Length: 409
Image (cartoon, rainbow, N blue to C red; front, side, top):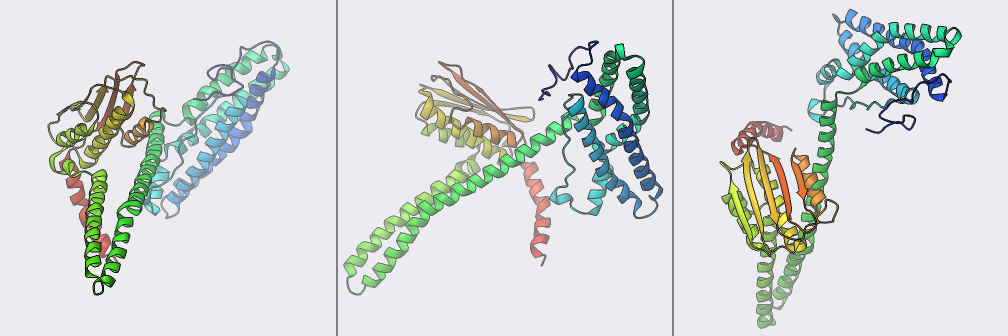
């Protein structure tokens, strides 16, 4: 959490003194402004709820109340800004009230607005603030004239209560907002990763198999032209084209294996990771202890995670041996890759560790790197466990919807 530059430590103001310093004047101004702000907020809350509830028997009552939640959010934002500027208290902004594409429509919007906890807490704040605003305005005004020697202490006491009130009612729900922020960030990572993978596949096809197939088509065209005049030359060109076809097919197989290897689909993680380990430049021991195969998406992420980690072992570690362990613990799939190399690996060291951590985080996974200088290096990755049958059942449930969407004109 970022602290205000006006606050020395942890949103705490400097000690109160007899002298009216700049900080005290800010608190006094805030306390005096409480009354007009409280009157405006209370009036809005009463009018909004009165009209919305009073007209609830009609078709416009609940929509008006739902629309009023946006105004309540604006009041909360204004109060957070005022507290930040004059009291130096930093309150995070809650997530905006945005509907997903699946939730578009009048009734999803109505329900989402009426159940908006951020807006209702701002309404509660507006109700509570009216008597408090009257009290703080009266006490501060009298203290300016009669009790000015102890005004800094009175202002500090009242401002502390204001800080607590603002934090309690205007702060977002910590766990919920943290989770929403993580999901929004993870969604961006998933989109970026998918776009990068599509660009890689497109580049590999364009530069590899597609170029060979274009050259093959041209060679076959020339061979067709020479077939009558120079059959021997045409036969040689056909032989060369046959070789090009084999190379293109091999490149397509390699590309398909990079997207999703056949051994993983047919035989599971144990055989697929053993195949990766056999291509590593150092001896690798593989141990897979799984009671069943996880969901295809989780299995694929685990495969490519181990693949990239073993590539790092081959290229950067100078290790003599390595090991891969995969097991299930409760509802988590755990992966641990260890090597006895020189260590010193870092998340920002250019070895793809940061990208792996982002990809795992996008599916609610974890990535932990332990690589002291001199080794050994241990990488632990966690993925959520999902049964393969659950994903298949989910796909079967979605299939009728896809069929109906395909038939829709």
